[in-house]
Image (cartoon, rainbow, N blue to C red; front, side, top):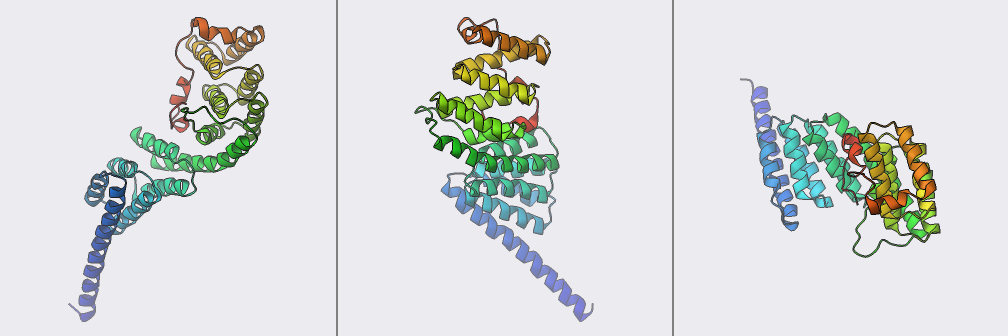
Length: 304
């Protein structure tokens, strides 16, 4: 073997050792951050990465993204779930890095990251292609960034805070509405209507959520906006909005057309019958959010 060949072999060994050392160093850093949050879930992620077919450089890169995510405040359990579930399903290292990067940036911008994390984990659980998950979550992160100043504007307009003990997530709710192509103007006008009737952020949150449920179940955006705005103008409560959702759900179960459902709902609203239906049951079944669950991109985060 030539002298140059020996030098190249020596350098290759050094780089390999440095890569392994890099993995170990980042792993220790991850454990330090995980211990602070009382989590030991990263052990499974580390083992999965080491046993994966990823090259050493790719392992180092993925561990670096995981370390940054935990440092930013992403729960170690979620980081571990994304890594282990993704690698087991054959998602590439760069794609997994992208998942963690998106969640981390959302967290660093002081936006709610739970919706993004849930969307990633649900997508992986359902076997959704990694590229589609990336597109959906990146789009969602942009909607969250748009939603925050909108919610702040509505809060500053004089809308009352939600009652004590009533946790709501209006930024997430508005982001889901934007995902369904509900216009920002319709959302802001809803805030004005809630403020005019001295309602609370809890009522605003539910109104936007109901509008999103309607669109998610196939109602046209203009129809959903008109129906819910009319309901708020008529003094509907959160319970009344739930009645409207159940009316929609029953109509869909009976295979009625959306136009027929909308017409029937409007007629009952004009007669003052819709608000009484939740007292008697109205012959209706479960909630109207069922159609949302059929579309993975509309999932993420609990109903409030």
